[in-house]
Image (cartoon, rainbow, N blue to C red; front, side):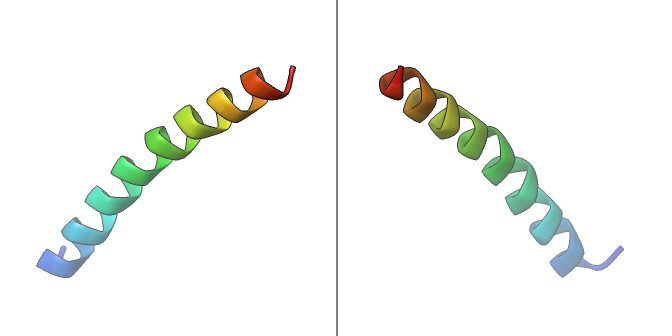
Length: 31
């Protein structure tokens, strides 16, 4: 793996939990 691929994967792993967390907050506020 290249260093860029590692950084890209790290960003993806960081973004997914944050996006899910924000999505849960938005859905909870809508209800």
